[in-house]
Length: 114
Length: 116
Image (tube, rainbow over all chains, first blue to last red; front, side):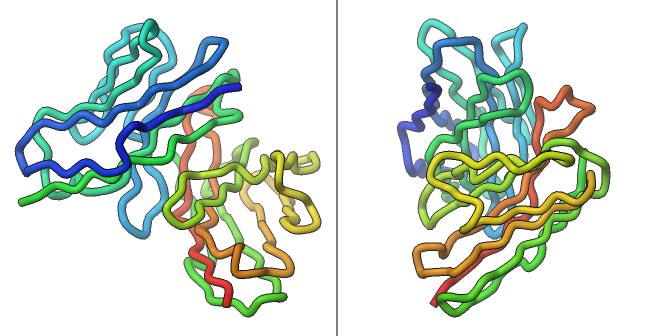
């Protein structure tokens, strides 16, 4: 069975500083990997996804993530955060062909400090 | 992309009653999903609702408690039956987008349910 671990429940960071949100997964087969963002009182929005190909994936709002198969990681990074990036971020994994049986991590709350 | 409208956005309900949550999509989609997000926790899949077939429930969720309807390719409802305070959660509707090979999903804004 697949699982996702987000190592940090909360990450405080100063505005314009870089940030990395960590995600590790476990699966016995090839996976699709996703990062979603949830702003307060809103649904989830897809930031980026890894299906195959280049291990460095660029998403919206200046975020990027790198798939590392040997370390089973898919960490999310941004070189310079803004106040508007304050939100909760969810890593997710899918083993199915397409968006099926997706497992979400427990989320990381990013707090950007002015 | 897809625009998903979920109603109601929030509600406060008495224990023992039922609430039906509606999910309307602005395009036809085959795969729809219902998730629960309990306070301070991640999303848990309740069931997959594909048009033309019975909903498929995940372990720990049963049809009697969470009946789902999927009458067409743009609409679904989830009912939370005989509610207890433990059902207080955010309930989210999600759809997989055919144009992405069903590799992306869009979410509604959620229904914040409080049971008192």
